[in-house]
Image 1 (spheres, helix red, strand yellow):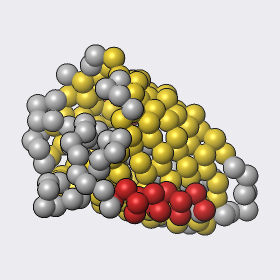
Image 2: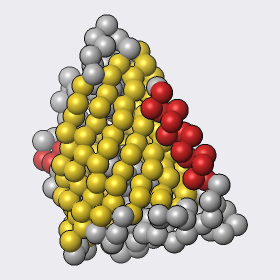
Image 3: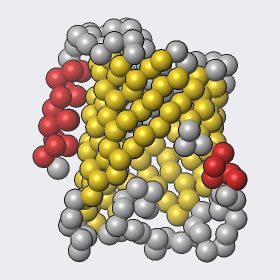
Length: 226
């Protein structure tokens, strides 16, 4: 929680600076921003996600690996308010629906309200939002790992472009789930080469359930833009 408060403080500090025009990524390390893919652009990742920019305001996607293991799913993001000199924040609403064909697996959805702002002095991009995750046909499903467990969460983070080829991430989360409150911190970076991007990072998380041990989830991904 202390780390989360520190990140919030950094957000307030950075929000006082002027608007710049750095590249605006559609994704953070473990989550997303309020920005969309460019219209007509495909983004395909090694972990199965394929997303398409329909327009400046709409983006659609699905995870092909989940589709192949009989978990049909769809993802969508809509920009509600575009960032400009007069509107310093970009706001987008996104959501995913997972409909497993196995009766023993819960149908789940998550809806997120994302707020982002680009600022000067290092091309920082700030991301923040509220995410609600629900299971329709089984509200009792909860695990020691808070990811995709029913509940509500608040995130805050910073993305900084070190160069055209390197981008760093710092994210903090606070989640309220049936097993109790959990906290997460994610760190990592993107390394860009042509139309390919490699992401490396990790997620540190702990919960206030009976198991208070800290856990670590490493992360590696590659994506291609077409």
